[in-house]
Image (cartoon, rainbow, N blue to C red; front, side, top):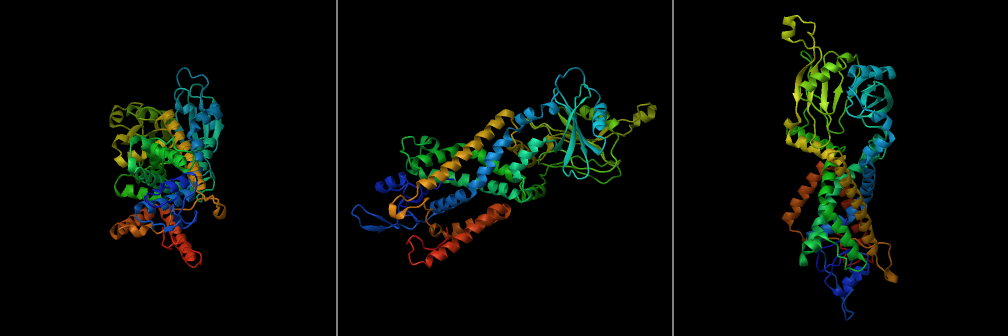
Length: 529
């Protein structure tokens, strides 16, 4: 959210100026020659007024966009950073709050048949349809999901000790997430405001990458006279208190966090409401959507199940399959190579196969899945006329290794965004990004305040924005190409395009109003941005 300018002779907000006297004023919180700063003209050493040059070129234009985007979008980013920081440590919070439901006190011996565990869960929850089972391993309980009318995407999850068959508790979950995790997830995504609240998070994700890339360019241009790794990567601790020191901390922090913030912006957009829809359509058009096994048994219509948000099951209704077959289904999946934690989707009618999917989110990610026909009869068994003629058999399979590259990148990116890809290291990195972004926002607003005019006759609460009209210095060919790119981005990312159009319209109106005033600064030509 840097508000620096790169025009060497233009004392833009917080920017470097070539005149030593003006630089001294800038570092003490005042910037001569801006829209509302200490005046519209700077004075020479002899006291003769001289006009301030009109800004032109990419640097001042980018500085003005960066300034306004930072001022207006920073509150959205701050909320996203704070709520994201809270969500980052949900595994530890779940372990504290739901230890009884999620873990087994004394894991020992051999796990009881999965069908018995399901029976125990059914005894605790006699109503509703059985839709999914996640077998417990190690010290983790088995989770059995039931749906009821009115629950929507949520389910009642019964937690069963796999070694004793004892029920440890029951919670209302969302795709396997505990109530606390679901609450924090909703807080981060939509502030518990439903579809309306999702605008905030999409605005934050749509503008974060703009602010990061714009800030990097501005900082790179600012150091052009003495561009060294130290000046780019470390703050100037020798700078006295004021805009220069604050800007150094703001910019250098942004340089160090840039890659991580760009990843968060990109992955956050993949499941946003509007940009995420465009992203999904693009993946489908490229044949790079998330693939899914066909759960349609012979003679039934195909049912390709796929998804990419949090994983889990979908709501079902109707007469389900016989739960007694679940052990055979799991055995068939294990024989076919599905290892590690899995989720079993229970079919709700006789035309649908069982689905068993890996649920490993930690690197290396496990997302192999198979469709299992629990009533399949092999030719060999029928020929031998054995009593074990009916058994489960895999009828379709999709391996994560065979996913399209873009689908894999999407999956990895989402896991990284949620803090599950690299475990505790991933959580710490997310926490650093959230805290660092919060500090950058604070420093950005501090710069705005430090740049305020301090003369008694021109006092103001905050500093002036970079001067308007910078677009006039851009070659028409480059300007036309830029407009095309911005329009395309605005279509792909509506909550980038709509706020930008609103800003431009407002800026035009403000410019028109100021032109009609009798006391108008010479730098206020009325041209937008």
